[in-house]
Length: 321
Image (spheres, rainbow, N blue to C red):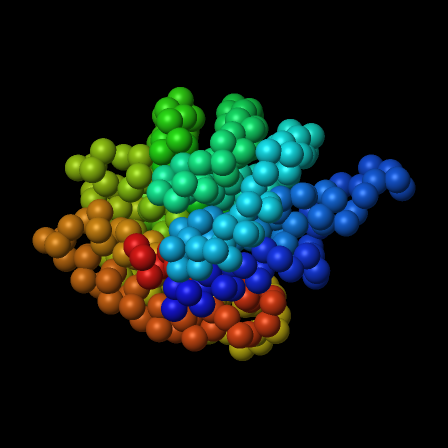
């Protein structure tokens, strides 16, 4: 399984087309080719997917060491990453916050990787980390409210990854600023309308993404009571605990629901671990994680690039939580 995911990551990173560019074209002379815009992260259909495929490949380096090193030595270079950092600074709303969050996750994975080759990748990623940190501070200073959608713009999901990976990289002020803003935005939330989930193209549960963020930033002793107020009777309504179905796997937006099942499984397992064995919510959470994994693991690869370019990351997260 892990070898297959590593091979999928390599294939995705090396696939420049088709590509969904996300840029404002300011004039007729601007380049539009992905590899020219993004010398490091031009594969895997879009920028954020390419970044988290790099993260996945670093995590799976022992599975395909020679192949992975060849790919990562080519993309995670000083010049390529400096160009990516410059692009973020020139386009401060680009990939906010989802791509930024995966950028820090990639940098943390390289910093923690025991393979000697990762030292150069980690050093090269320094300018990207600096840019993301600066942009995050600026964004949080100006943001008026969180975004609660179940897609890339979800604030809670992005903050959760930015918080933990910022801390792992020694960016303590970033982590503390995120924790403070998370409490300001979410600590008073009560009686979340979980019956409204999912919408038709979610790959994240807004409810579980928020709960996972608060698990990370609240004192351990305060989290169980917060969760009870936020999602009273956690296993109800069943819509939150029932895997989503996909009726048209060729529809890229509807195929997000495969990822929703996987991200839910990941969050269910993380929440169960935070609550502990004596909490009556733990068993239903773990059972739901297994049910959601069973529903989507058969669809992680082999269903076409519309799904293959990103799902392996979430399958890995769920299976290793």
